[in-house]
Image (cartoon, rainbow, N blue to C red; front, side, top):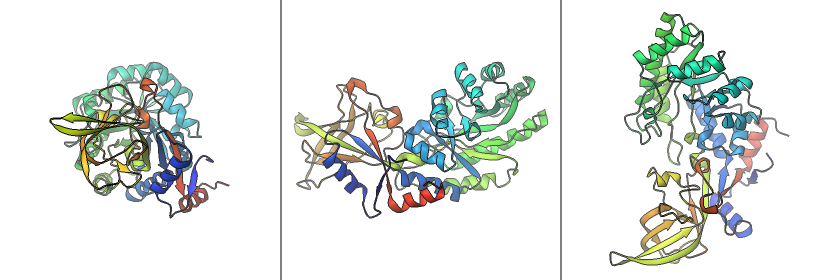
Length: 400
């Protein structure tokens, strides 16, 4: 892990970015990835939900350093494809620390999972069970049910998750009839989940289905997977969700493992993006002057959530503006596409070519959804950590 840059505890993010922009990346966008925050998130989870084993969803951020650090901490992982399984296993993670959490898998990916001994995998249809019967009959089947939060911008139940009553019971029976191993049940309430009680509903459904499974003769059910949807942005916490989950699982038999699939939780606040303002123009809009700024990254290589109207981030300036006066402004990405709009009609101070705009909470679904559309580079990642956190981490994993 020599690529991680270690800084004194007293040095803040802005100082680090200032140093990098003045000595290295004079025109290229980049992230600083605070690995200390990733470690702290892991420790916070273990403290607040000690019975729920987190499986980091690498689809949210597949940065190799994040995976390496979590692997070194003996964390587990949620993977959705052959490539994600490969990414995790190359850092010494064994198959029993991975759940293949995609209910509609390529046959070749199931065959690969068998080859590397990743047995836990989700299903939500009879067709997926037939597929697994053909290619990996030894797999541990996790039936995914639908349990949507009443308050979430991304409703994952629209695509995956069987109905929790008759449909789930049919899948339990079919699993038994095919001679497959029913391992457990999972759900995903949506992301982010703004209704903590949704987890309680999902856990209750899983507990009921475990009882049904045993009545049918599936006696080896060992897992409840409560999915993801946990907040991770600066200023958020998992306290209320933890309280709901801990209460809901307190009567679950100790033989049943409870796991989760947090992604955003681990990485959102850990990544900060530095972008360079390379162009500027003024236009008249409705009789008023609007400032148009163009930076070296955009919705195709970092700000996908802006494209989908899931975020409306406000940039910070690396240097103090000349004046506190603010003007109607738009911030555009670097491509030619008219959808490449990051900030729409916001009051910002006067900016100039050469300024750096800083964007917090960029760790989730930014890097993993980035492309090189129009030939523009994806921002590089510079992993950092504070000295005290680095020393503690090295001691924990006996790194010499």
